[in-house]
Image (cartoon, rainbow, N blue to C red):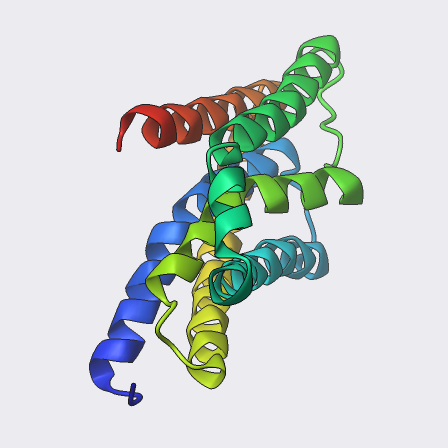
Length: 195
């Protein structure tokens, strides 16, 4: 395969499609932490982009070497995403309800961000099937483009969430938790019943 306009266009579109769940979670994180600083925003968006880069590559490796094992695992992806996002969303919801009178929102911790990164990117493993005919450099470039697009979209989601979170102080954690739970349910329903 040659690196054509279509290759770049398809990779960017794939990145946009894959980043929508991460955008929504970034929005919820921005709502939850309206005072988030730029360096933290870069770190949060960076976590999501690293996972969105890595998952298609892992999928590509699985397709190239251990495809039969990956196909067995694929049916558990919606359950994993639902469990991860439901758990983190539930914690944010609980903390938001518990602290709604204090007005202060708790920052999402690093381990929770890692779980969010996995949960929102786990469906990108299946992208390995769509890029299975790529050679290694092409698969790396496609995955890199997906990661870059994800970073930009997640950064925008954090910015939008922060602005809305400032206006919703005291209720932002509750809204963020509800959004995360909804995303987990949406991933589950669309994966289980949308095929």
